[in-house]
Image (cartoon, rainbow over all chains, first blue to last red; front, top):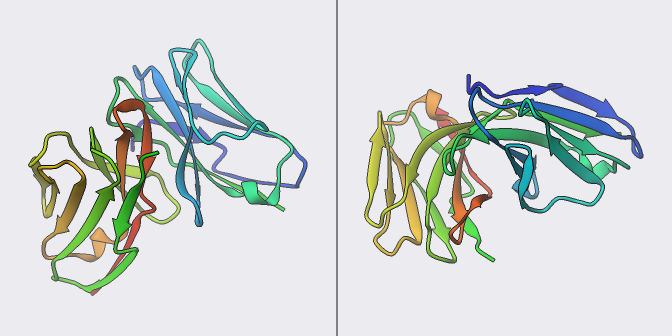
Amino acid sequence: DSGVTQTPKHLITATGQRVTLRCSPRSGDLSVYWYQQSLDQGLQFLIQYYNGEERAKGNILERFSAQQFPDLHSELNLSSLELGDSALYFCASSLVLGRQYFGPGTRLTVL
Amino acid sequence: SQELEQSPQSLIVQEGKNLTINCTSSKTLYGLYWYKQKYGEGLIFLMMLQKGGEEKSHEKITAKLDEKKQQSSLHITASQPSHAGIYLCGADDAGNNRKLIWGLGTSLAVNP
């Protein structure tokens, strides 16, 4: 158990819909990272927050947004969903730069 | 931009055999991480390497970073079914260690 929790574990929705994925980092970790993993593209970094502020951006679509709240939990919002958005979404956290602790992931299926 | 290439893409070995997975970078590696993933689950940290020539071991898994810091290898000795999964290498993006880039992974199956 990494100490990082993600909800929900599974999510099935339709194209055009909007969903919110939630992540609670390990106790004491200030950084939260979001990743998307699909079979064809592998693990792709989306975005990082540090203590409530955006720190780094990766391959995140404009339809996606994220935020980190004062209690350090983070949410990833995915809107206008397309079939190609179906993937595993991981959250990871770290105290300092370097080793990241990954949550169990949310499996999103867009029908 | 920096890319990580892993080889082989997949591997099937007999229990008890040794195996090696490679991770090659297009640029100098400033921090190299090895993770293991069970299918459909989260990533589990294995090891981190930073210095050229560095080698670390944990149980039957040894990871090395070459002197030029452009290639890392993960070696498993006397493989067991519990070693099965996907092995991913990740690296700090050319010194910008706010971002990690990742290889596509090596899928390992160990037959009893």
